[in-house]
Length: 102
Image 1 (cartoon, one colour):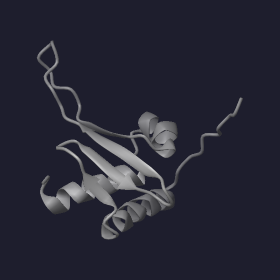
Image 2 (image 1 turned 120 degrees about the vertical axis):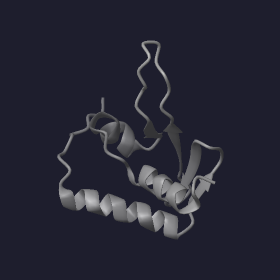
Image 3 (image 1 turned 135 degrees about the vertical axis):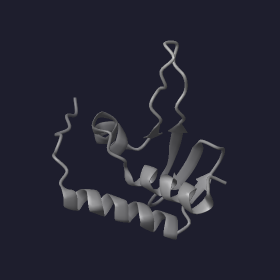
Protein backbone atom coordinates (compact mmCIF):
# COMPACT_ATOMS: atom_id res chain seq x y z
CA UNK A 1 0.00 0.00 0.00
CA UNK A 2 1.34 3.41 -0.96
CA UNK A 3 1.31 6.10 1.68
CA UNK A 4 1.52 9.81 1.14
CA UNK A 5 3.03 12.19 3.61
CA UNK A 6 1.05 15.38 4.07
CA UNK A 7 3.29 18.42 4.10
CA UNK A 8 2.62 21.96 5.22
CA UNK A 9 2.57 24.32 2.27
CA UNK A 10 4.20 27.65 3.01
CA UNK A 11 3.53 31.07 1.52
CA UNK A 12 6.27 30.68 -1.09
CA UNK A 13 4.73 27.45 -2.36
CA UNK A 14 1.28 29.09 -2.59
CA UNK A 15 2.79 31.93 -4.58
CA UNK A 16 4.44 29.40 -6.90
CA UNK A 17 1.08 27.66 -7.46
CA UNK A 18 -0.56 30.95 -8.39
CA UNK A 19 2.27 31.80 -10.77
CA UNK A 20 1.97 28.37 -12.41
CA UNK A 21 -1.76 28.95 -12.85
CA UNK A 22 -1.13 32.33 -14.49
CA UNK A 23 1.45 30.75 -16.81
CA UNK A 24 -1.08 28.10 -17.86
CA UNK A 25 -3.50 30.84 -18.93
CA UNK A 26 -0.75 32.81 -20.68
CA UNK A 27 0.11 29.68 -22.70
CA UNK A 28 -3.58 29.31 -23.67
CA UNK A 29 -3.87 25.85 -22.14
CA UNK A 30 -7.40 26.36 -20.72
CA UNK A 31 -10.52 25.48 -22.65
CA UNK A 32 -14.06 26.13 -21.42
CA UNK A 33 -16.41 23.25 -22.30
CA UNK A 34 -19.54 24.64 -20.64
CA UNK A 35 -20.56 27.28 -18.08
CA UNK A 36 -18.97 25.25 -15.31
CA UNK A 37 -16.54 22.74 -16.88
CA UNK A 38 -13.00 23.52 -18.00
CA UNK A 39 -10.16 21.45 -19.44
CA UNK A 40 -6.62 22.42 -18.49
CA UNK A 41 -3.77 20.91 -20.47
CA UNK A 42 -0.82 19.86 -18.36
CA UNK A 43 2.68 18.77 -19.19
CA UNK A 44 2.98 15.95 -21.68
CA UNK A 45 -0.36 14.34 -22.47
CA UNK A 46 -1.95 15.13 -19.10
CA UNK A 47 -5.33 16.86 -19.20
CA UNK A 48 -7.23 17.91 -16.08
CA UNK A 49 -10.89 18.76 -15.70
CA UNK A 50 -11.94 21.54 -13.35
CA UNK A 51 -15.56 22.08 -12.37
CA UNK A 52 -17.22 25.12 -10.83
CA UNK A 53 -20.00 24.06 -8.46
CA UNK A 54 -22.44 26.94 -8.18
CA UNK A 55 -24.14 27.81 -4.92
CA UNK A 56 -27.70 26.53 -4.64
CA UNK A 57 -30.56 26.79 -2.20
CA UNK A 58 -30.69 24.02 0.38
CA UNK A 59 -33.88 22.50 1.79
CA UNK A 60 -33.58 24.63 4.92
CA UNK A 61 -33.56 27.85 2.88
CA UNK A 62 -29.83 28.50 3.30
CA UNK A 63 -27.45 28.71 0.38
CA UNK A 64 -24.71 26.12 -0.18
CA UNK A 65 -21.14 27.27 -0.69
CA UNK A 66 -19.86 27.69 -4.22
CA UNK A 67 -16.68 25.74 -4.82
CA UNK A 68 -14.27 24.40 -7.41
CA UNK A 69 -12.92 20.89 -7.89
CA UNK A 70 -10.18 19.36 -10.03
CA UNK A 71 -9.33 15.77 -10.87
CA UNK A 72 -5.56 16.28 -10.40
CA UNK A 73 -3.63 14.48 -7.67
CA UNK A 74 -2.65 17.70 -5.91
CA UNK A 75 -6.24 18.81 -5.39
CA UNK A 76 -7.40 15.34 -4.35
CA UNK A 77 -4.56 14.93 -1.84
CA UNK A 78 -4.35 18.44 -0.40
CA UNK A 79 -6.72 20.96 -1.87
CA UNK A 80 -10.01 19.28 -1.12
CA UNK A 81 -9.29 19.06 2.62
CA UNK A 82 -7.58 22.42 3.03
CA UNK A 83 -9.73 24.41 0.61
CA UNK A 84 -6.59 25.37 -1.30
CA UNK A 85 -6.73 25.78 -5.08
CA UNK A 86 -4.43 23.77 -7.33
CA UNK A 87 -2.78 25.48 -10.30
CA UNK A 88 -5.50 24.12 -12.63
CA UNK A 89 -8.30 25.72 -10.59
CA UNK A 90 -6.31 28.96 -10.39
CA UNK A 91 -5.88 28.89 -14.18
CA UNK A 92 -9.61 28.26 -14.68
CA UNK A 93 -10.56 31.15 -12.36
CA UNK A 94 -8.20 33.52 -14.18
CA UNK A 95 -9.55 32.34 -17.52
CA UNK A 96 -13.12 33.13 -16.38
CA UNK A 97 -12.09 36.53 -15.07
CA UNK A 98 -10.31 37.43 -18.32
CA UNK A 99 -13.16 36.21 -20.49
CA UNK A 100 -16.04 37.47 -18.32
CA UNK A 101 -17.33 33.92 -17.97
CA UNK A 102 -17.78 33.46 -21.74
